[in-house]
Amino acid sequence: MNEEQNSKVSLAVTLKTAKYLIRFGAKHDKRLFYMYIVKFIGNVLGEFKTLLLPKLLMDELGLILDGAPVSEHLRTIIIYVALTIIGELLSGILTNIADSHINVLREKFANLLAEEISLKSMTMDFQHTEDPDALDKQNKAKEGVDWYSQGVVGITNCLFEIVYNILATIASIVIIAIYCPLLLPVQALTMGMVCFFNIKKANVDTKFFLMLAKSNRIFSYVYYELADFRYGKEIRLYNATDMMAGRADKYATIQNDLWKEEAAEEVKFMYGSCVANAIRDGASYFYMGYRTLKGFITVGDFSICVAAASRLYRGLLYTGQNFTQLLQRCNYAHKFLEFMDYPDALDKGETKVKETDHVIEFKDVSFKYPRTDEYVLSHINITIKPGEHLSIVGLNGAGKTTFVKLLCRLYDVTEGEILIDGINIKDYSEEEYRKLFAVVFQDFKLFAFSLKDNIKLGDESEGSDEKVEEVLKLSGLYEDAVKLDKGLDTILFKSFDEHGTELSGGQQQKAAISRALYKNAPVVILDEPTAALDPIAEYDIYSKFDTLVGGKSAIYISHRLSSCKFCDKIAVFADKTIKEYGTHDELLRYKDGIYANMFMTQAQYYVENA
Ligand code: ADP
Image (cartoon, rainbow, N blue to C red; front, side, top):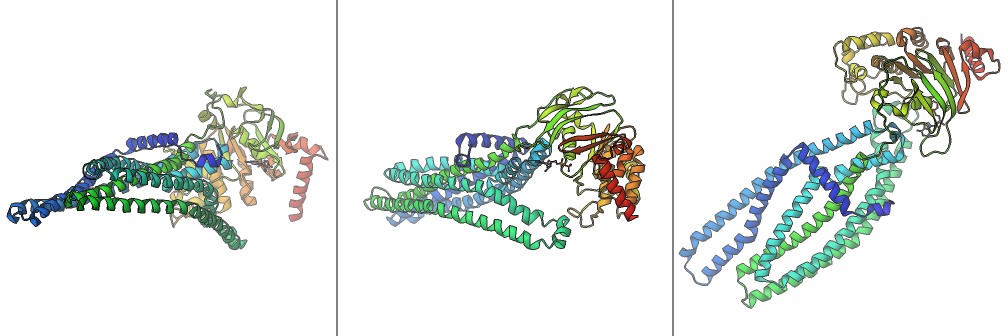
């Protein structure tokens, strides 16, 4: 479906989305619907006060003006006035109570929906997180279900207003049919025109909502994410403020231009509505005035007719407006449903992982990233035996990290197969399979929670605190960690806590290694595990390798070839494949080999520096 078709509001989408959100509301908090019942009663009392009571009062006053004795009608007049006051009071109290509760619930539902988006984002296939289409859909889902549609309350409110205004419209029609029947076709015709213009305007709104999504995303990245203090060093030291401000200006201009374009497209429909309204008012007053002067209706009848005509107009207008708003809001909120239904990229198997030592095999594996044409890995064949420590080396962009992503099944191979214990990894249950690996990626992320929570990630089993201390000692972070303000309970970063700490790059890397060790998975993968460590810490980590990973299988990606000596096998990635494979000593024997050359260059560097 292209953007143009996409921008047309659809009834099927509206029904599906409305049903989903109403159910969502009913599942999480039924008070919302009770509050709408309270609001309904409050509104009906208000109508009674503005529609009926003035007519009754005027008719009584008319009788007095026509010569009837005041004493006979005074009591009735006082009752009507009292009813008017009570009606006003009760109506105000009830609608206010309902509105204030509904506003609180609006926030509650917004948070619940945002939580659903976060959960989906955290559980969807990883490859989507690197896919612009999924990112775009996620952004539209967030905006669509939040302030564009106002979520559960926005949709419920539209439905309530539609039902309520239809009832008010029917009541007004009955009143008008009794006193001024010809007013009905005039109202119907002009309202038809207003509705037509409103639908046209709604289509323009939706079209621009979709067009604005991309620039909104970039704009909010530049303004909000880059304002994050974590980017502070780069922005200051590389003097990037002007560049950032320039980018923000550029997208602000794009947004402004789009808004201007939107306003220009919409204005003609707004003028159309104004003309239709003017025609309706003129014709109505002329007709009602004529009937009153001719004595066909009383002044009280004229008054209820004016009120009913006004209510009919508002009833139809609000029904139409709320209906178009419902279509529009559901169309926005449907982006949420689309994101929640974002299809899996990978087939999910059910096979359980065996409780044995694991053999990993890559059989003629080739891979290109989705939506790209170029292979980044080609004909990879390698076996990693249980307990083996494999080092992967190669220049930047050689495909080392991609190899790890394939092994962790963050992506599926394009050709060939990866087997664990002789079974294609696609056949394993995803949850079980993920338990096999403890990975520290090059671009690992720590969360703005306490150091301890970053390592345990929710595990509160007995002895978990002791285990955290153990892994921190192994990675060499323990001594630094206990010196922090609140020890292991110190919050990382300043996002949530102004007293949060900013660990150094090396300390962060040790924290990430501790987290991997804590997981105690059978295969440990460290992508550039020591890049941010100083030479002493690096030596420390390597000399403790065996203790760190024990008898587990391990894969290390490293640029520091000295680390390869600690490994059983080395795979040299170049030209999209494994060019050299063997032990450190074996590879050094190929004098013109890639590894030998790389090793000698680095060794020379260390010698010279020494
Ligand atoms: P290495 O870890 O050896 O530095 P990578 O595995 O990160 O190399 O990258 C290998 C190649 O794949 C590079 O050309 C890189 O640009 C490309 N690449 C990495 N990630 C993606 C992605 N998500 N989409 C498209 N291409 C990618």
